[in-house]
Length: 222
Length: 249
Ligand SMILES: Nc1ncnc2c1ncn2[C@@H]1O[C@H](COP(=O)(O)OP(=O)(O)OP(=O)(O)O)[C@@H](O)[C@H]1O
Ligand SMILES: [Mg+2]
Image (cartoon, rainbow over all chains, first blue to last red; front, top):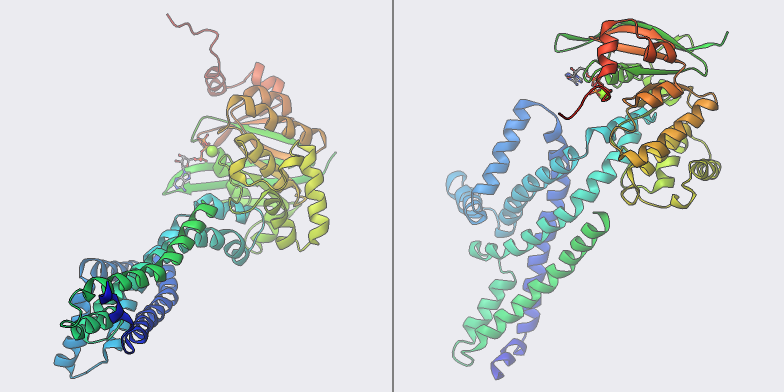
């Protein structure tokens, strides 16, 4: 039990919170970029252009099949080796997570738009609404109701997956945790359990409210 | 002699080269109720959808109050022609009042308070005064279709197109919807109605048009059409609704 004291030794707790800050910052930037790009990508996907469609498919399959860690190594080490372009770990992380998130988000947007039954569009048109009015009052609100809970779930998955960036040298919450554990290896051999438990709760409290919100919206709009 | 509201001249429509409507011509006078009947797939829905350009015709002319429909501003024309479909097509994310006021407020730019007052009164007339703030999914099929009718009416259309609006309803709800349509007919609403309810057709129609193979095969007063059909095709069609001569064994 006294090994938990390691958490408050020196500035350990501040460092852990700092690590959480890095995790949340990387997540937030990546999620924000993914949402913006994903909206554009999703609308492009609904156009029935075969070239765009094939490219988007390829993109989506890539981010789904290739593990995020491989993409991170590819961008962080691969670019440095091949093009002599050394990105910071944070930049590489944002690029990879946005590449992943925008693809997935695009597919969610496409799904949300195409899931609206054709007769909703026709009813709006038959009522004498213009195209713009149909989108604004009839189609987009329905698409958003479908999209938002799914997008929130994607965001929580992205937050969790940022833990991988410690492997390309970014010091985020999990990395800080293991640094603290390493430093205390001899004084407090049981610290690992406690520190990881704290990290667990930090992730939990970062993602839980978001999950709750998604569940609540899903119920409200079902 | 009443004014002609809608005139259709030599309308044709093809899907993938196959002629679905061939040279259809007829006109609808003010206050007239025309019922269109015919076998499944004969082009009844396509005909209605060509009138407000949900489908693009391949030939012919459609005139609303003497002015050609199409080419220019379809939105303006659709505001004058109300349409109700078979599938429940209320907007699921809005309550009944939202569904009713969207068209008049957004498309016609009428003041919201005035529209809402009118919506309430209209809803009460179809027996749904208490459903003002209900969501579509909280309504029965018959209630949804009555709301859909009121939604179309609040645009103050020149005429209504009704495409099998009771086809997806349980039998006990068919009546409540058809009563609303009958009331509209008595009030002088001009309507083009597609239906499989032959008894209702006979009751509400001023004229019946029988479509077959994309042509108007027969056209006449309901009395004559339903009791003394002139063509063999019409006789066969009407026979499909009879079970009197059929016995189980
Ligand atoms: N969008 C479309 N593309 C291709 N063919 C179509 C399309 N819409 C309708 N058709 C075809 O046109 C014909 C007429 O269809 P329509 O829906 O007008 O028939 P209907 O008389 O309304 O039939 P029902 O009584 O079953 O509603 C059918 O053969 C149908 O398969
Ligand atoms: Mg039909």
